[in-house]
Image 1 (cartoon, one colour):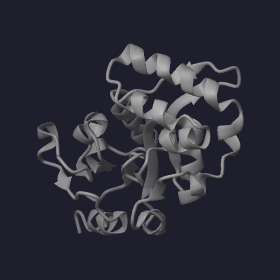
Image 2 (tube, one colour):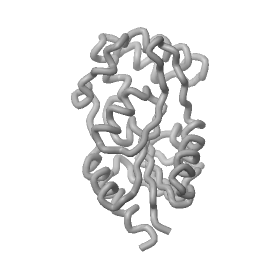
Image 3 (tube, one colour):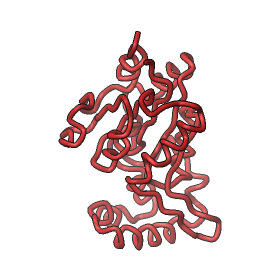
Length: 205
């Protein structure tokens, strides 16, 4: 079967270098604190840290110039990858646990068809999105398009992407050390996304 939908993680997959949150924090003089937050693993700590981060931002992230966040760069071949998928009629999505306003900005920049992330209302109410939510959302989105998960590819770089990568027919891991749970995934450390997409486009041909 051919790949009909490709889902990408954002931090470390579509972007390389600093995370989106680190780039935003650097602008606000909060980079060292953000690095402490990035090392957190307990869900309650991360939950509280997201509240703290949003207090830093105020309305500024919505209007941020997303093409020059400090330390954040697009992965090699990112723009060409989305262009190639669109040209072949393959649907695209960005599935990330980072802020939805950032995910949307990159989705619009790249031409992704859909996106999801941690939402936040104008009043600061946070709708948390976690790694285990990724396959749930992707399953829902694929079903809405009439696409089986066996015809879906996903590209990610970290353990937080494992639930999504384990759920699809064509997983690709671009991180350095591939987790044992997805030993069957294609492993392309720091891979060029255009080259990865070319391989995905030839699946089933």
